[in-house]
Amino acid sequence: MRVIKQKPMTWGERLYIFEALRGLFTTIKHAARGLFRYETLPTISYPEGQPEVRNTYRAKHRLMLRPDGTPRCVACGMCAAACPAHCIFIEATASDDPRIEKKVKRFDIDHLTCVFCGLCVEACPVDALRMDTKEIVFEHRTRDEFVATLETLTAWNPKDYPDDEQSQVAPGGTKNAEARKVWGMEVK
Amino acid sequence: MDIIESKTWVEWIITIAKFGFCFVPVLYILLLIPMERRGAGFMQDRQGPNRSYIKIPFFGKLRVFGYVQNMCDGTKLFFKEMFAPAGVNKVLYYVAPAIPFAIVFLSPCVIPWFGPMVFEWGGQTVRIAGSIVDSDVGVLLLFGFSSLSAYGAVLAGWASKSKYSFLGALRTSSMTISYEVCLGLSMMGVLLLAGSFNLTDIVTWQENHVWGIVAQPVAFFCFLIASIAETGRAPFDVAEGEPELVAGYHTEYGAMQFGLFYMGEYSHICINSFLIATLFLGGYSVPFVTTETMQAHMGGALAILCGVLAFLALAFLHMIYRYSRKLAASKQSNKLEILQEYKLYKIVAWLAAVVFIALGVCAWLFYNPANFIVNGIAVGSLATAVGTALIHLLVLVVKSIMFCWVWIWVRWTLPRFRYDHVMHLGWKIILNIALINLVVTAVIAKLVGGN
Image (cartoon, rainbow over all chains, first blue to last red; front, side, top):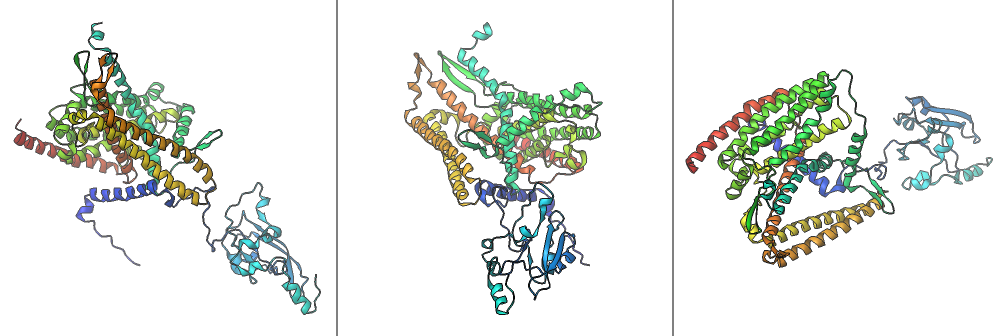
């Protein structure tokens, strides 16, 4: 245990008046900043001015896609297992692709229950789930609308992620189809 | 009839018009509340309230730098239901908020708003005092009025039948009593030097010698602290300390009754800052210039006044242009409507700047009292007297606004004292310093002045 000893106040500090004047100087500096450099204030006039969201901010989820446009998710259920709020609901079905066992039929995230901890993203073995949409506003009329389905989770625009190469190849890519053709598989 | 005929009609008009000064503290409320709110915001790195607006058809929204917020607040307070809790003393409960607010109209009577106006009219010299009541006990009258406002707090605390209100009222009354003593004693030094209780005489003495703040710096400090404490504002607002007493003596009040207490507090600040400016900062007197010099060069004085106002308009323009540029470069989605509003301010400020500069040049070139003749009567000396009064009034207003800012500044800087610390500071420190200062001043005045 570390004990921090407070320094006894000096004579000038005990007089209070000089320290008070120092405090007054600090506040007048801030007041002058607000008056003469209004735009440097750290506050944002919120709905009109939007805050800058960092890349690492855990915002609304999205599902990554393979180059042919299908979700990367293999319905392993690890995200649902990792979720502390139990807000992820997954139903699996057989995959068309013989290399992959399952594909996802239903993938719902209830954003009213979600705590945005990011553990699902960490748990995903195929990097299908990400939280980098930077969408911080959730406003809907009904509770059902707060549940993000497979459609909404995959309906993102590659143009919003110009720095991410993996987001650029999907959706509607042809690389997977070409690969299957090479391996002599049925192309859907 | 004799009374009416004892004065000329010009004298009567000016004497009656002086009663308009009673409303100055109420006007100051309109100035102080936005100053407090936005000032507090800026000190805490916030923007302060700036969202409410008036919608003007075919133009857009008028935000007036957040000023509209106060109109909204005032309207809301005014139209709320007046509510009294069960078991209160109805009469006292409803009378109490009116007391501090009524005092507001009495206190400005003794403050000299400008130097005595002396001018020739109809072949005789007319002298009109700068205060509404030119009393020889001016300061005492003012103190009497301002201590009366404690009755409002005491009655409110007693009538509203709540232990929080009652404790708040007890604290207010004890604070007022203790700090009135300090206030009176710290002021005595200046009175001693000026040799008069008349506020006009005190200002005249300061004009001829030095300002009170130079002659009595210690007294100034004590007076400032004591008067902040007397108005019951932070850091001395133990009477309405939220953590202990909800809101002090006006806990049970809402709507405009609360509004009256609120306005009474702000007017009290206004009166006290006028008093400090009068006692310690030379009141209406212009720094470094005597009234005689100013009256001898009235045209130049008016020109300088117009120049200062024009400079303020140009400084305002600079700020508006600068901020418009920054706003236009930002991504804010409502910037177009704000810039639209700023366009209006730019037009007004440019007009004001041009008008002030033109007026200043005219005053500089063409002001000559000998030329002022209306219907064959020479009004030159009246014009000079009115011009002097105008400059005096503006100087006093600037000084008092400076002190009003000190009130706000101190409130948002220093944390609240504990109740026993406040009493300790009042009775054991400030009172003693004021007493010692009084004795030293008296000795020095006797040795130097010899009167």
